[in-house]
Length: 385
Image (cartoon, rainbow, N blue to C red; front, side, top):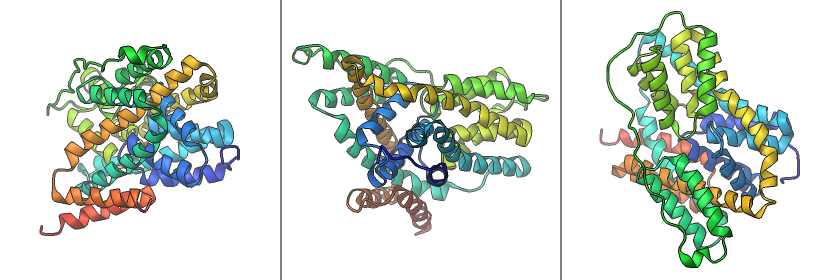
């Protein structure tokens, strides 16, 4: 239960295993953590888990990785924070580094599409299961439901995720606390703003010679300290910095790195591991990985003790409630976007439906659903050629 402590060895074991099978991006990772540490092990209450999810959205860095740090802190203090976070990152960093070595040595990437084909629809069902369970706690009345729908709709219409999160938090705080505001219809859906698309192209730039490890580490440290949002935001940062401004990598190398970050389990920010290896070999991979993740450890160490205090003030508690609903809405928007991209054939629909049954009816562990989806995708793609 929440009041009990967990050994560092047990934390390392659980989060290392999670790091090996956490496919599908932050929403899927958080869904797996809810299944493992709230539903199965009861390390956290669902309400407190929701508060932590909302808090991770308020600071820069990879949300799901920061969730592992929060859970580690809750179970074993600051040593648990570092052990849980490092254990989650380590498998993805090693796998990405190995793929980078193969890429540099042989100039190509392995054929992974058949396995990704089945993982993606399975992950959609895992996320839906988490939304259903977390939403039951986050949506306390009809106003919370309206706020969540508005945030999700705004993101789908083009509003930046971080803008939607903070706007939903502040507007919800005012709406939930202001007397009579519900009757006046004080809340209006958030309006989308212009977004800049990531430029695509095939122009190649040679890898810069003589990039020092200090330069490389400081660059990724800066990215880790200011990066809000999804992996797509990371792509924009890296393209503008590494490709256009510094010329350390080519655009095609960046796209290959993003592909490997999507394929490997764990945080997508291990794309930095791949790029660090391409730029400066194994030392570059280590320095880039440390640089991009270090700020998250510091941010969580500062933020975690503050979260209970936010619950003591009616206004900050209302803000946190609104942010929690907005965070669930962002997960729902991810499901819609993934569904439109993924559920495009009878095979993917079959995998998603089977995974949904396992999640809802049999409460199957998310790890088995993801691995089963990978195998099913490979098998179905080979049926009928």
